[in-house]
Image (cartoon, rainbow, N blue to C red):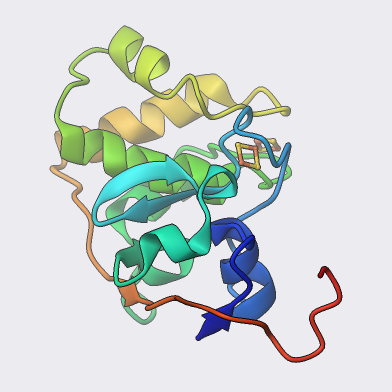
Length: 161
Ligand code: FES
Ligand code: FES
């Protein structure tokens, strides 16, 4: 794909690839709604230019399920009713996949601390923590990747120049 050099990874995903599962909340690194995994590491996609991730493996919420089989963390969020409006949920789940992969959180307090970059306006925090701990106990890792390769350029009709 070709993107304008000033395009954030978040906008590349949503506006160029129509992967709208990744949400735009604050658009400046404060809410975590835009969290995706880049080469397995969680990042705020609103703070990264797409061209900086040329050749990287980017996993969004769309890439976690395998067909009809939900990712263990997606299942845990459903089972624990860990959302209300759902706007923060894709970011919460991608962040939790990264958290589990990091292997640093062992207790509920550590989960809270290391997930503190993901804000939930609905206040579903207790259930989110329970869902994550459940997936951790079950050994819920990550799977599924959407590999995208990004190259600088102008999209036809791009009006932001
Ligand atoms: Fe990226 Fe809020 S939209 S942190
Ligand atoms: Fe509504 Fe988190 S479920 S913001």
